[in-house]
Image (cartoon, rainbow, N blue to C red; front, side, top):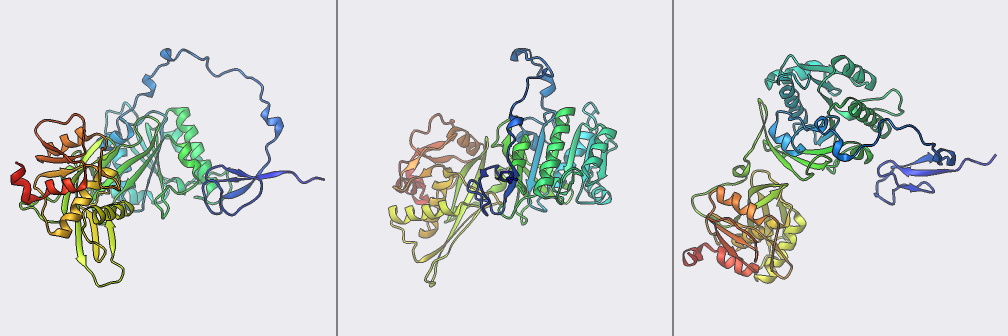
Length: 460
């Protein structure tokens, strides 16, 4: 008898190959290619069946059932695009200890503390006991009669709790600890995670129940499990933060109901977690006297402008290879800016250690921070303080020119609100708000000359 033909498929991205390989040619994942049965041609022929509901003009479709419902946590609602949509499945990923469970416990409490029109909240924990979660809830003052708690790791038991409680929102902490009796493998494996997530998505769509899933992350910072997990859910959020700082950033990665680049700011403290509606001042270190090696920029996180301070330290070294270190900044962009500063401004940095960092734990990755990085490095290398109350916004090209960036008007409005009076921006910035002195700089040399605090009185 001829052997049944088979093909191989990557469990991460779904790419199919004719024979087994150790590394997927598409997504470059190791050990993700598994054998799959060949497709049956008979299954491709599907007869037409009766539709569950007739098609209607789009203008007659009721949208009230799909309106977002606020969670009671404004910063989370901001990232979600207004709140939780009925039937939406949200995946919240983050490193251990960053505060995922604390945030979702706050969501469960705020949801339950409402007038009851949206139903109670159901919190399923698979990593902790019910007593441990209760102790955390008491510590954060998040206990309510309409909050239901269950410690389960079996998917069938979770679905039973949904039938018994009939909640308005479901929280599962975490999806990697749940196991389906109909799927093979251990909890957290590829097969189990896919089966559990698919079942919870089906239950959410059938009942119009918003579901919040906690997901683990890998050492690289990506969501653990198969890549198809991110395709199954409607929203993917990343909860980020430095363990040495109380600041936490909630970033939207995927959102079917709103903007996918929004950012929410939180502060983690002993009594729980709270939103920070105005975080700009947290990333600044305001001084009475200007100091060399510092520059202020306005970063755009989603639609939110945030003021951030860039610092640099230039030190002479006797080592054959000078050290280059960056904290909170993209090291590759810092290296590029160093090369431009040394070449275009004739500032020798080849025999010096260069340290660059941001203040407050914020991470800057957009090109708009290039000008502030260059000014901070140049200021630190020449012991030259920059103008007080000045922000620098712009991308730097390899020839030293300053390029335009997006939303300059919105950035300048935030800088003016925080008390800054001067701004260095690229040429032709577009409409800018009144009340702030805007200086257009075509290249890095001009920007450094105008930023020099010794020339500030002459400029005025």
